[in-house]
Length: 230
Length: 49
Image 1 (spheres, rainbow over the protein chains, first blue to last red):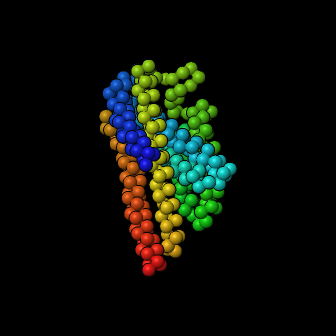
Image 2 (image 1 turned 30 degrees about the horizontal axis):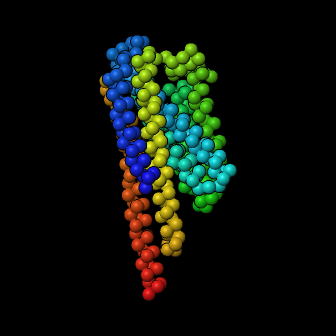
Image 3 (image 1 turned 120 degrees about the horizontal axis):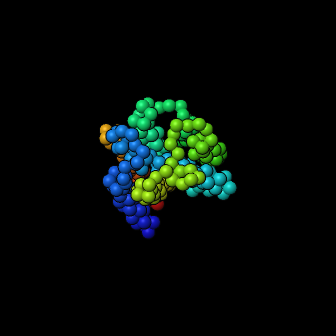
């Protein structure tokens, strides 16, 4: 019950932070200095939701990898529940990354899609985790499903650092926001950006907690059905 | 401006779909838990009687 109350506090906090993020991104943040057209002046503000969505996607898949290792070591259902739940949230945010990135690309590169290394590796990561969700349903034995998913969750994670490093390893037209010389944002832009990053991280934690709770509820249904021989 | 609005609309739409689907599943599972618990209690009562 105590946990329930904290979950609802976190849910309200997430909502307020996300509203704050919209304000920071659309009102508080100054326009970038290097924009060439009026359209770009508006669309550069997409980064305040695009990049934090990508961060949440990476974080979610990292949590899945850690939880997968946890499951293989401990063989406890809770680890598998966290791994599965985190993938579902991560896939939703990665979908947002691909769509918002595509909209930005249309104004910056005059195309919705190009097979640039960053875009390609991002799409591959998205497909890998979408397949994770689909393949889980294909295995009938729950323990075998969890074991298979754990191995998949660990191996699949290799796509995340490759996606992150794609713009540093290969020739690309995708902007590099952070490099060894620092952030490519003015101080006011950076504060708005960091606020959004924080808000998205809290939102991820909240969604993950709700999703984990949902999976345990599904477990309870399965257990009751077994008791009733249904 | 249209592209910016579209990007933010897509983000909120996806978030809404995720939250709504979780809410729907939670409602359905809570109902199932209630029904199954009731069925279990009824069966136990019948067993005693």
